[in-house]
Length: 309
Image 1 (tube, helix red, strand yellow):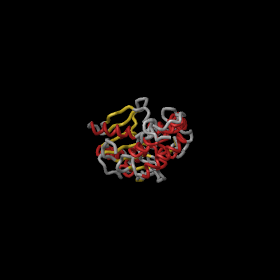
Image 2 (tube, rainbow, N blue to C red; image 1 turned 45 degrees about the vertical axis):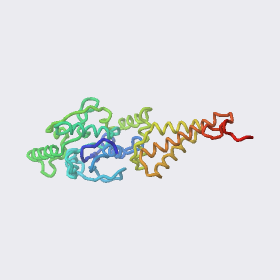
Image 3 (spheres, helix red, strand yellow; image 1 turned 180 degrees about the vertical axis):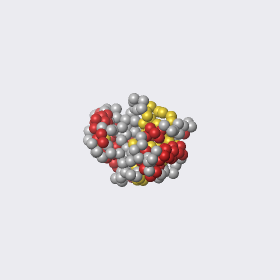
Image 4 (cartoon, rainbow, N blue to C red; image 1 turned 180 degrees about the horizontal axis):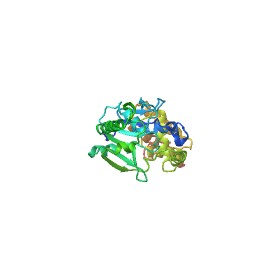
């Protein structure tokens, strides 16, 4: 458990676009850091009470509810309207499925700003200052009101009521809302082209990111929701490698994890098992450097109480 208590909310993830700039590729399924783009976004909105993905169903790393706009491919406004029909919370996070660097912290930041203010929504802006309405948190009542008004206006223009939202740009919707903006050029980075995919794949392999990315990918793959002290485990691996033998590092960290799991413990159990293993590695290293043959300091056989020869 963390001390953070997120604003009760649902999430709507739009994942049914045509990806024309990617030649029609299955964009939500493209992998960055070994994980599908859609799964990366789903991990970022894991705090949501209900997560609705607007797209044709597919396997995902965690359970979601599926929806589809009518007709399929009718555009983001119609997709948002379809997804919103499956939500029940008073607040909703709206996300596109192509955000490789979106994290839970960013989603929480949007929700915190929404709770603190009186605006209809809080959205990110990208590196060029452009609004990103699909990386945002909204008050559901205001969003539904704006969608209904937009549908009425479109219908008055001659559009059939059922398809009144088809093809409408998101700026038509957001123009009717009172919005607060938060700048984050990393979290708002989306993958519209193959160049964007290449940039994302290269960035997560940079020295400052690769370890966190790898750990997140492994936890996602194994279905583990456990925050551990990465530095402590790295220190353990270092001590085992230096004090015992290099192959001892991965084997020891594996055994620490296994021991914690056997005890059905959380981060505290991992930390305790790691502490014991570090102490053992240190004792092992101490023995290797002590070639005097003197008894261990923990022994009772001190010069004052040794038995006579």
